[in-house]
Length: 285
Image (cartoon, rainbow, N blue to C red; front, side, top):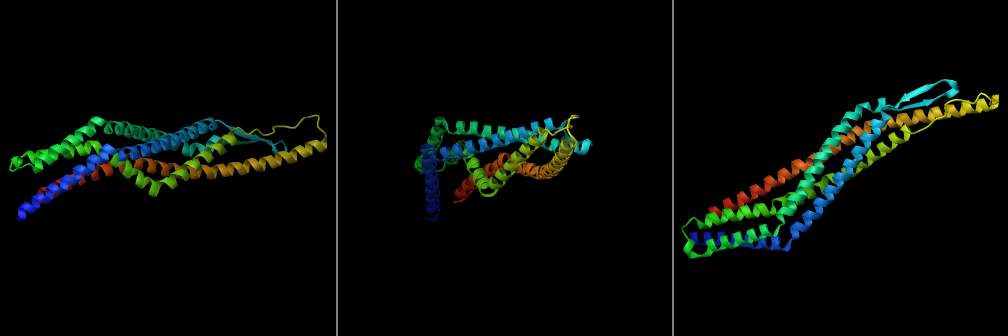
């Protein structure tokens, strides 16, 4: 009697799993949610990749830029590119990482379209029916049919839901812990690009006209001295922005490596282990 109750409990568990999985597959709830999450993540990655490429281009232009001022007729040159040399290589590596991240998210979108194909849904439904029949019909009792049916169903379950599970799980973690930091870091890099571009294209007065009166020359010298202080202040700000940009770039690399590589693998592993645990526990009943 105890053995019979255990077998009935196992059958009931598999029946519930089969019905719930089939209902989710046919309703498309998981597909629509994961498709929306994947599209948002892909757009975020493209935006960040564009910011990285823009920053890389601005730095490349600024490498040979010199801002010249002549306070009081004394020439002073500021090499903008020299300030940006420390982060130039880091920005190029960051661009490569973002290209990989965007490609990974694009691959997830493709795989999601494949797993949402009606043929896989039909395969899951057929595997669920086969498993229920093998579990409940007395003619299959004592044979290997129930065990084989469970394995086929688990394979169908994995193929149908592995990608939606890893996308939804990754999105939950990202929205909870990483989204705010990613937005701040991306905005900071955009601001840094703007500062570099503004300073690189800034045109300063170069010399005074020889026909100017003494008073005009004196006024010009004062204006040039003020310009000198303004440029020096902007360069100091640029140094600070470049230093902060390095920190934000490292943070973004960590965020997108987590989102596109580590977290998907973690949730894929958890899904597989969950299926194994379900199969092992129901087998022991």
